[in-house]
Image (cartoon, rainbow, N blue to C red):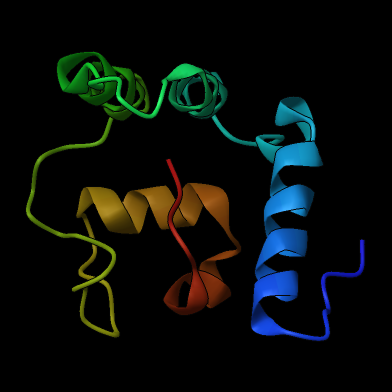
Length: 109
């Protein structure tokens, strides 16, 4: 879908339409089912609705535990360029990408 527009407003509208028209299974393909559940839940909220934050946190906490991650304070957005061997982040990267490209990995769980 071409999201270019003659104005910023038109471009934003087209981006929104593209996001809303992408089927959830296509959008979340290759990711844990909880991502689809979360997006579906968010889409169902009314503007005035109050999100159930405990429910949302539990969705992702379940993925975290199921995948065997540990709370080791090694977050992908603050990790040093050379990932410390043995951290859950390093192990996750090794499972998700080739060993030689772990430095360029984007960790999504």
